Image (tube, rainbow, N blue to C red; front, side, top):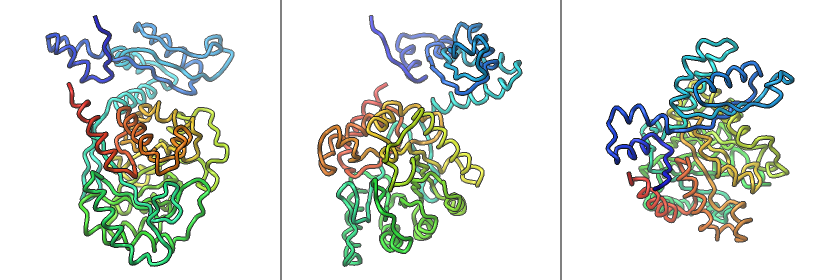
Length: 402
């Protein structure tokens, strides 16, 4: 006798195929075995009570605040508890109900579809990256003198003579397995000083110009400045990695005009102040709401979903415990329906756990990357490409077992 774990339809179907269940029976039964806990925030108590009664009628349930049942409060969060078959039958019931319950089911259906999705194709113009069980690696190239990770490649004097060495460094990253190269000319470490547009352009553009002709993987420009993004895209970059999550509407317009890829990241505050006592009422809810709003802004400005990546922003306005909670609950970001990028590489939360300086946090980085890759991350942004690539090969081999 065994207790089996299966969190995806293909896993359930494989188990039933192994015991030779009839094909017709499999299609009927697998939705009954796939169970969900779905939290819906801020419903009216009338809507929540109707939802609870409908779930009970299906043999499922819904938890609401006690005062919502008595009518003493007007709003409540709601926790749906049921299997996929029950949630599908909820459709016909909610369509007949008032108080916006028909629209609620449309949102619920989209959320379920997004959560189960595990394959994407990123449209980056001349590049099309397929994402599935195999995770992608974004290699970090810091063209800064003050990187937190002690890997800054920029030197104030004689930078032009260093460009060829930087090109060699990046080409080695690609050989080691980097699928994307992320180039930044301004440090985003906590407390970092801002640099001018002119300085950021001087650090990044000469390298991007050469790299675009040398490597056969897409280049990402790590910047929140529209002027820098535009110049990088003009020189061959294919992705903009915006740590401010498209707060600047000018950046969204640049991305839309160039039809480039975009990484939309969550950050509380700005690098200079983001680590000054960051506080959240509900960490994951707030990050998802922030990213969802930015996605809608992008869509409104003509950026297609096939060009978007989301990043919950580990280390950006989060404490050590916040970062660990993001990793533990990473699958919850799948409701956004977009590829998830995670960047734990050498971050200070690992240093606080390991009591090691940035350059000695490779083992911690590998642990965080493998956990993330097994729990929803599609792209890992890292310094140590070869080590992470080898670790992901083991994860890929495990994932291929059916």
